[in-house]
Length: 130
Image (tube, rainbow, N blue to C red; front, side, top):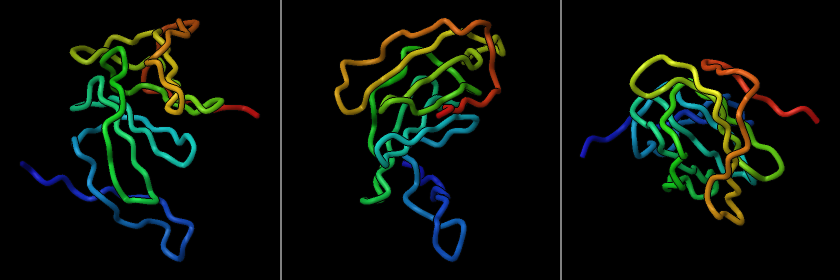
């Protein structure tokens, strides 16, 4: 097995970045959101449908339920205790998608379709207002 580089983590301490446990599957162009103190990393090149959860309290990564679609350059946000994934580009091409799904880590019954987005998009950021 190949050891992946340690994951940089933003820290409120004297140094803005600290090194923490390496993610279990190396990837790029992913997106992440924090729900209840857990960081959920979704998709990306080398990640496709994969979702991994990082618990800063234990400094450990664990697998989470895969997204319903492969995507890189997708948008991810936390809303109402759920992880929201949307859009992105297809895994094998650079075709923008309009799909959107939500997953509740606390009471999960799997990913739920909540889309489509008003238009297909990739390489964008998502944020929650309020």
